[in-house]
Length: 72
Image (cartoon, rainbow, N blue to C red; front, side, top):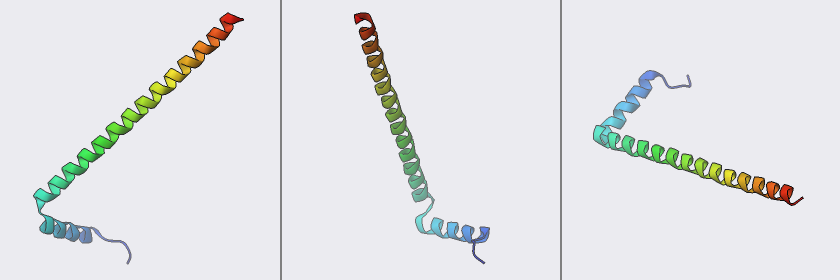
């Protein structure tokens, strides 16, 4: 008792296919895949932007240290 067996999942899958049809399920799958790709692209762009900002901050700090050393 407790968990669902493979037969229970197959029956659920069959009912879902009968209710929605394969074309509707395919469209839902494509939409979900597109959303995941868009999310991954957005996360990559955010990481790239954060790295660029950090590099600019590091360059500015290095330039400030170099300027102070030359002044001394």
